[in-house]
View 1 (cartoon, rainbow, N blue to C red):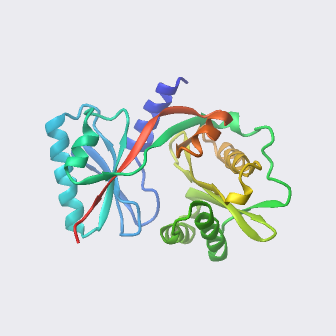
View 2 (spheres, rainbow, N blue to C red):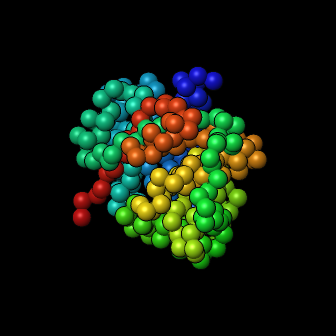
Length: 265
């Protein structure tokens, strides 16, 4: 399939007909948008808007979503904007409505089969890729995440623990250990009924970068996705990871920018 065909399939299967990304959340069609709604520690936001959304419709939808999440008492929510969404000035309209743009990421996809046998995709010597299946594994994963990205992993802990307790079949979580110390971590979301699995959170601590661990984490998840019948892997990639993924065979489908609305305190 051409990249534009894969993008159209992605829009249809994962955005317009989105599934909840975990237990305790729901997906709703609200007029011209599709949104996910959960608790304060879940991801809350707009995942899709109608392709023909015009200026007046966009402004009305923005106002409606601010009122909706305000009524729930949530401190913040996100409008996940893609570069091919309309109208062309939707980002400017979101900013005018009080949203703040977070760093953009590149939307990438690749056929699963092309990634299952990447050359040099075994973990570096002395590194073990271990599935995360319990609270102890979650702590190791969270520690690797904090060391790799320099951010607090409190929300990650909550989300992975909840998934393990209530919906363990819909995702894969991994931690990379060297001498018992966490040096990397990664997740994969499985979207039943679609052709896609999503790669999330792949991170390596600074002293282990450049040794092939990131590649090994991608290939390991690709093999699991293939075993479960998925056709494509999808990634929202940072500027750091996008060049690596392109070298591994991923194609850019566009960009995505999180626009975050934070309620006044």
